[in-house]
Every structure is written in structure tokens, then in C-alpha cells.
Length: 455
Image (cartoon, rainbow, N blue to C red; front, top):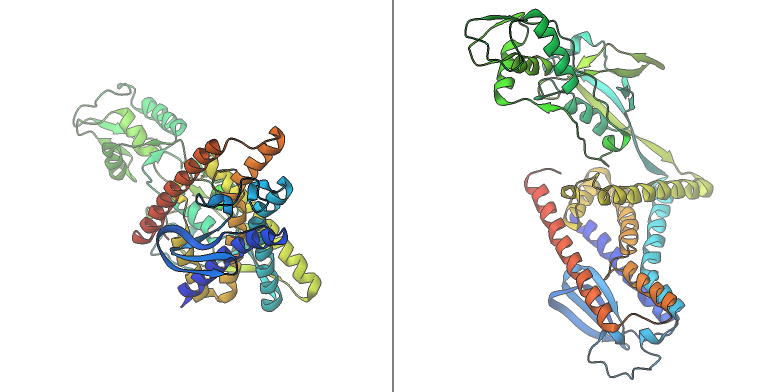
């Protein structure tokens, strides 16, 4: 049922978008040839006439369009007819083309406003993450960390922890024996090895049964993640050197040892790599009894676990009274619009990989889960954000999207005449093919994520 509700919400958003175009056209008394619900791909489920408009429902439901007489190749209207869209003033066409985006923005505000009024609160997207239970069987270092149940985790390595994702990201990125080491740290450990074992050069294979003294090593440097990485808006990368299979095996053998008896296959360089892959400290600041406390370093296990169970309580924005509803709704929409625009920028600049680009299938799944687990209001708020996203994406200057039509109209205004019809058709076809390819790519990402339980 929750999935069905989410599909209905998405369908309403599409209808609202197309209704925006349709109502703006009717406001200027423009002739509309077709109102289509769904994309004209595959069979048409229903077709009928409502007044002077042909209404169609297509099998590929999640889409829509409003068609004017100009879009119909067999239309018999004279070329100079005022019923043709292209013969209307540019300002009217701009308003009609932009009306779908405007309708989605208004719809987003209405959904958020109603949620704030009926629910009396809005989520902030930020969480208090606190320790509920220690799990010493999951991490050998937890006992010496001085962390306690009830501690609120405020910072890790200088980063504010505002969600469970931040805690998990730091735990995973700092795990013991991650198969990588910093180049500078490897060089430092090589120099220590060289002082203790001056008879051998860097890559010289040490003869069998020769004893190699091992230095006292410290820990690897603390991992620092950016705000974007902690919110999933930037892929986590590092410049560390990856250990080969032999070096990783040697690392495991050397743990806790003071010397090595060579088996005739390793060099000082191999040993330097092996002893440099150990642990990254997690410098945690907690809030306890109203005071901030910096704990001794904690180290993540080989599995990326720090040995705690946690509770995550979302910080709620109360929306009481008309003023509170308006203020809370406006802030919620502003913050999330910024995040959507920023996320789009991160995708275009490659900070977020295209493999993380998802579409309607996963949105429906996530929305259904939210409604099922967190209630209908969370589903409505997700629909509001999708409505905003539809507005933003549709306004991109890509042919076949509303933003592409706006671009053509602005070019027409600057040139004093429209582009050649065949040129517009070729560009529009290329834009449409790009969108189809992108849709297939996103569809693959969605299905792959579901099959592999990525989300």
C-alpha cells in the first residue's frame, strides 16, 4: 500500500506540472491539441476528447506532455493562424513554457505548508547521534576509549557528526588493516627500518633465515572527511598507496612482533609497506552531562566497527501557529532547494559519480519505505522535494526539456526571429535521445541497487 501511495503522489506531481502548462495556455486562450499523461512510448491505454483537447493516457505512466497544433505534422491550420503556438508573442510562450516549473514549485510549497500545519513539525535533516550500548566483542579497543552509554557523539577528527552516516563513514574509512598506507608514513618507516638494518637496500631481497629488526611504529594519520563527504555529496577518495597481496600477508604476520625471520621473498620496502598499514585514530568528542569531553583515541576494527550501538534522533523543527508554519516551511524549502542545486552541481563536476544517479524506481521504493516506517507525512515531504527536483531539472537548458524551450525563445528574442525549423527539430531530437539514454542508464542504476541491496 505504501508503494501505491508513493506512485499516486508521483503521478499527481506530473499532472500538476502538465496542468501548469495547460492552464497557462488557456489563460492566453491558446489552442491545445493534446494533453498526454505518460510518455508516448509503447501502447496508449486510453484516448478521448475533452472539449477541443485530445486526452491520452500512455502505458509508460511516469511522464506527461501538452501538445500544441504546431507539434502535429498533419495539422491543417494556416501558417499564420493565431492558434499556432509559434505565432503568439514571446512573453506568452515563455510564461506557458515556464508554467510547469512554476506549478511544481507552488506544489512543493503547498505540500510542505500542509505538512507543517497538520503535523505541527518538520524534520531538520540533522540528528543527535548517541551511544546506546558498548559492544566490546566487536572491537578490541573499545574498553580503553572511555566512551560510555548515553554519550552524544559531537565530533570525530574535527568534523561535526550530524547523522549516523557520518559516524559510519568515519568508522569504515578508518578501519584497521584497510590495505592502504600513506606514502610519507611508508617513507618514515623505511628510514627506521634502514637504521636498524643498514646492510640491505630498499628493494633487495633479504636472504632466507636472516633476522630483521622491526621499529616501534606509531599509528597512521587520522582520516579527515569533508562536509560534502559526510553528507554523501562527494565521493570519498584518498591518495594512499595500496599494498600488494604479499605485503598484506606480511602485515598480518608482523602484527605485534619485534623482529622478522626472512623467508627469502621480502625486501625492506615490502616490510615498510606492511608495518605502515595499521590503524587510524578516531579522535572523538562527546557531550556528557552537558559537558564536552575529548576522549582518548579510539580505533576501528578490521571490519570497520568501533564497538558501539547507537541511537539517532532527528532534530525536529516545531511549527506552531501561522507564523511558525510559514517560517518553518520557508526554511525547509530553502535548505532543501540549496541541497538539490548543490547536489546537481556535484554531479556535473564529477564529485558525485554517475553510478549514484537514481530515478523513479528507487524513489518509489524509498518513498514507500518512508511512508511505511515513518508515516504519511514523511512521504508527502519526499514528494515535495521531488516536485522541487522536477522543477529544477526541467528548467535545465537541455533540448526537449522546458529549459531548452526557454533557451530557444531567448535566442529568438535576441535574434529577432526563431531558429530554422529543421535546426530546432534536429536539436530537439538529439535532446530527446539524450534523455532516453539517461533514463535507461538511471533505470539500470535503480535495478542494480535493488538487486544488490545497495539501498
